[in-house]
Amino acid sequence: MSKSYRTIILARMGEITLKGLNRGKFERQLIDNLRWRLKEYGAFSVVQSQSRIWIEPKDVNPDVLEDKETADLVLHAVTQVFGLVSASLVWKFQGDLQTIKDHANMLTDEILSEHDYKTFKVESKRGNKRFPLASPEICVEVGEAVLIAHPELSVDVHEPDFIIYVEVREDLFVYSEKLEGHRGLPVGTAGRGMLLLSGGIDSPVAGYMMASRGMQLEAIYFHSYPYTSERALEKVKDLARIVSQYSGTIKLHVCNFTEIQLNLYKNSPQDMLTITMRRVMFKIAEELAHKQGCQCLITGESLGQVASQTIEAIQITNEAVSDLPVFRPLIGLDKEETCNISRRIGAFETSILPYEDCCTVFVAKHPKTHPQKKHIVEAEANLDIDALVKQGVEGIDTYKIERTPRT
Image (cartoon, rainbow, N blue to C red; front, side, top):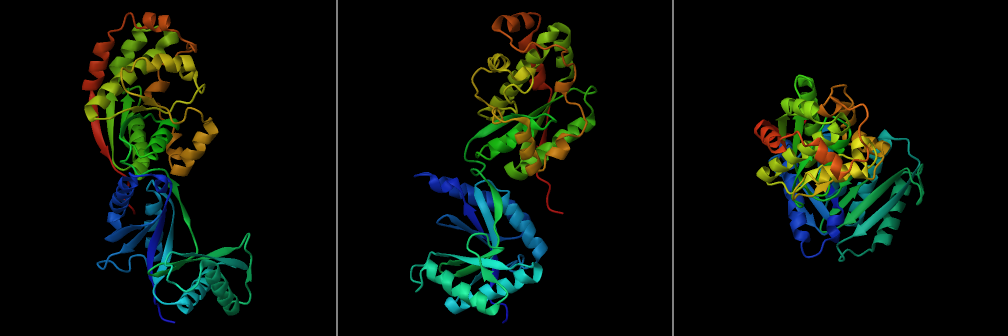
């Protein structure tokens, strides 16, 4: 039979559907984010209905999803947008039960041409209650038609090799695969945060996790040239670019930290050097956050992971911040869990490149792991903290980091 369908994308919303009276705000932001994410692929209609979002090429590029390579790129782009559970390439058409059977058989032919599958099942959703058959009846009828046309197959309702999904709405839809999304909430629904970004594994993951809760990101990186190389700076830009695949455009603020770090190294006790350095970093980041309209700081700290991340050290570091909350989304994760997330978002291989950052230069041999208030008072006695913070804020270069477009 000649082609009688159009390929579009069906995306499924996640926890947005649990929202109350402000659900519309989240849905509108999600649709805006999808349109922004897809604009490089052409013009698309993005329409929300119930817990579904339908993404359909406009007439100026009606066949863009007919090319498999392009369709895979567009589908992947959709699943990078926070707020979606999954997405599928689906066939859209009009007709009746027989039309559904015909398209289900066409889809099965296509699947079996690529895979040596032996079992299947049919799942159906009937959103259009005027359709004469209920969902279980649709499954029976379509399943029977597929079995007649493909006698080599059998039905397995528990662990089938593939599933034929049928959706009955004003139009009809069939499809067979679901690509998992990153869930979360749409970026732009939860304020703006300043991420303390290093060249390691943890902080990019922390940024990704806060973006998944709807937060827009800016980032600050402390660069100690020549003790940290220009390649280290490029590495951080690359990490910010990876995170921006999910969060959208990131302003990366690079603080020239060399003179400040040398001052701290000279005038702070060695066992408190890491703490004093982090306190100054937090103060600079907070000052910058206020200027940029950010409402919190974000770090990649995990409790007990290193000497500066004991509960006492975290408390002393927090006291350097005057009025912004400090979010630590990795606080209860172990390193393996963090590494797994880093791999999943594509940051791990970049994070482990062997370029030093300022936190790995001038490291104390025996850092104090349980600092008290009196220790930080003594450690900062010979430091002009206000002057160091002012110097740091004035010595910032800002870069606009955007995701890498498709190749």
